[in-house]
Image (cartoon, rainbow, N blue to C red):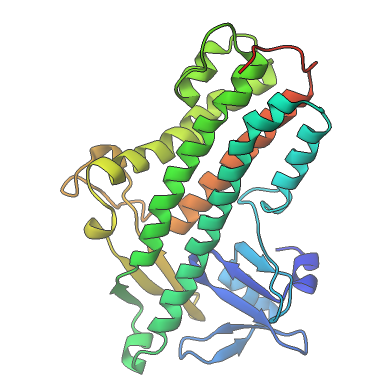
Length: 300
């Protein structure tokens, strides 16, 4: 967590739903195990191992929450604007239209990721209203349906987003004929991709595309995660509570009876990585569109 972020932010929502808030005197606080605000010194701060997901740079009256990528780079909310500027500089109507749906689905994915992150704080806020003996327990199982709703929406949007990139990809790198019906088929049939973009897309076919699609297909066609899993609040470094909303290790099993949870996968952490990777893939595709003469590629 950078010093610039700590100086500029008002609140920082971290992985596991841990929300830290800056007081007017500049001291950062976190809800303690008894529910009361606890001032964070440097030792406690480091012990928590905080991973910022959603940072609010605004005010209480005018919030400005921006998503941090799971890897290095600009805030996720800023990247679509940068990509749009690259497209605008092409002065090409066909590229405006072929990327419009891509940018819509990027925005939709970011929206659902924010909702997923906030759902964690909602669950933990309700949990902290419980009796002291509950708060003192090292692990408390609970429901977190809202988080599962958003996770399902997110994996669906990521698949839709990458499938939507087939239109600009085919316009730039495709051959004659209609646009292929999926992201994977488009990557396979675009034979003149530059090697740097080919490497990016080959990796994207596994992560995030195949991962998101495995969860999407399971949730849509076989079994919802919420009815076969659970969430639990737990103590983090003996300082505060965090939340794990479990999703199965093996969505390809497509059966609640065969799901495993040995990796203790968390919906927010998994979705955060998938969205960050999907936005990075789109950024590479947009960069590929602007790196070559716009006359190349078939008409859509």
